[in-house]
Length: 184
Image (tube, rainbow, N blue to C red; front, side, top):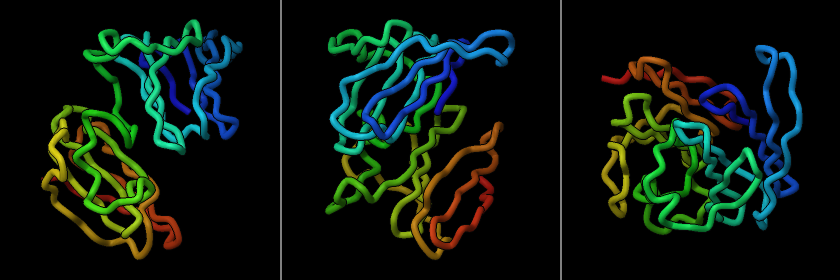
């Protein structure tokens, strides 16, 4: 689930391979369904909105990257259109700006979460090995170098920078822990 930056839309990725778009009104008290974005072959794993709230990018369980015009629920297939879109957030684990986070020999499920810092200089990942990695952003160098931090005893399910990028939160899976990291 992710709200558009302008607050006018809510996108919900579903296990039925679709993204449901809702219009938001009355200061968040009223929701009306705009439509359904269909095109993925597997369940939706990650969503991000463009800065201008005009585009949406999504990843799915079978490693697809699709782009959308959510107000019309239409898929965008033109590379020229999607190439220079500025994203408000970057949580998708697949994409040009993050392909360097994937380690050699990974099976596609090893990276569970990605989060770009608000200042757009750092990128953090949480993986199946209980590690939190810190990269420079964009991370478009094959097998990019990173700082690696441990603390979780099982897979890391999510990561997110706090509002001023001075701290990072990571959540664990089986260990059910929540960790706060200071960025220095």
